[in-house]
Image (cartoon, rainbow, N blue to C red; front, side, top):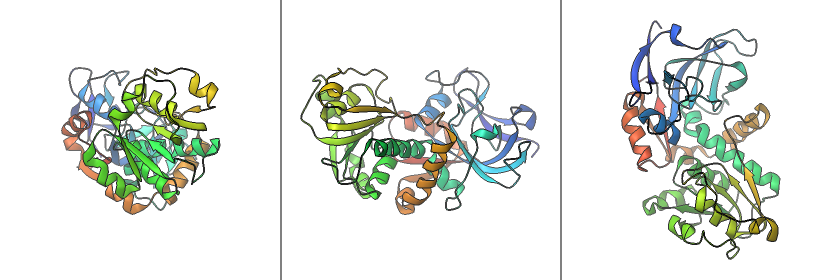
Length: 328
């Protein structure tokens, strides 16, 4: 293709829809024809230029991509390979997925599981990878189905949260979904949530270092007072996997949950996750996430609507996952 559309952040106002050529791509060894990407909260920030997500300009936005290898100078990848890339600084320090063509480093590339289409892979995307890495971290700590009180998921209506609810329920866990959006409860129940707690209820108790023990484990996408409250209510010997900061990067807690109840705080990173755990997470996602649940929380939108979609996700009007079709 002689030229192709891409969403480019310039540092001056919102990102622009531009025509690029191969001369605009980075010099990395693997060239991918991109068919799909996804919409994450930080994509909204980057596209609207409302937070310093992008580290250098100009920058192609989009934290994920899926497509087909069309050229490679690395023997690990050949033209025709169906692949995906998530994390590794895409749209922050390296041009991302809101484009028809991109070049990346070979060690970043993951072979797309045969059971997943490119659209399904991006419906999962960084959000689903993060959710599965959280589940795996809790399992390593000893979480098993039937644990007393089950598992709390905060920010449950968001991308990571909704996929975490679906995964945990499919694996046999009792899931309590925390959300500030009551209108999403019916959908979360369809994904497998057995109970609900209002986001405000968690915030109310955040000032107390220890509260009544309730859940054996948690997946927190919010941070700040929500994470502090979740820690204070986690049962003896339990753990909370923390992966987000939608509510803030601070953590107003004390050491009491850790030294009096043996609670563990497990940090989960999906950006620079090593190849081994990353591949295992994608293997499990391709077999343990029910396709009907994934379909129910996914909508597909054209890249031409990215500015409106970015505003939607920042305003909290997006639940579940939005796949971006880069061909439209």
